[in-house]
Length: 263
Image (tube, rainbow, N blue to C red):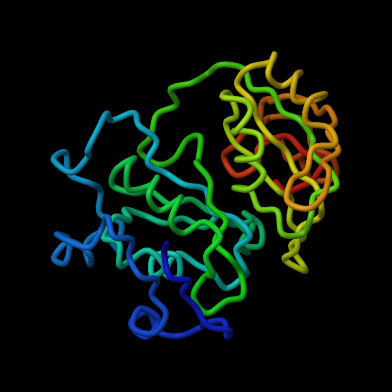
């Protein structure tokens, strides 16, 4: 289990100071071998063929969400610097204002490294913040190829307890249905707290339909869930309304919601 890094005050502080004071401890998998590689990787150097560690089309990218306004690429890089596995970090910004949209993407050297980060850091406290890491697989990241174009089927999950995270929601369903591809708990950007509902994505329509009835009323953490239908994945060039577009993709998961985002 990884130590939870962090403090209470947000940066802004120098990059070197951040790394000395608040760097997360690296998972045991990463202790050897990378001292000479870290600085190069920190600045986004691509992985070499010898370090690719698997098929070129393996997903090596993670989605990271609920970022606060001051969490930029330098901050994200500092969070994973000690692992020696980060290739690049990208915060998604509004094209008009340049402000963070509250999420981004992390690319790692190998799929195995990304999986270790996902399991070890998800839910841990972020450095200099009261915010926890919210990580999930990105369906398509920099340098990755989309290998699964099969349909995706999503359900709405309501009445969630405040402590339920993406990972908790996903594992609640994945323990029963093998085709679960991801889950997203919707967070209020102002308060940073759960809105009490989310979405779960399936690769199998039959399992989605089963979950609609079988999981309705089942406990997730401390509360029974309320399950409902939702529209399935649509193209991102959907019509806009008043300069906004329905958010059809949630953090690379392809999850549908009624939330509206700027285009």
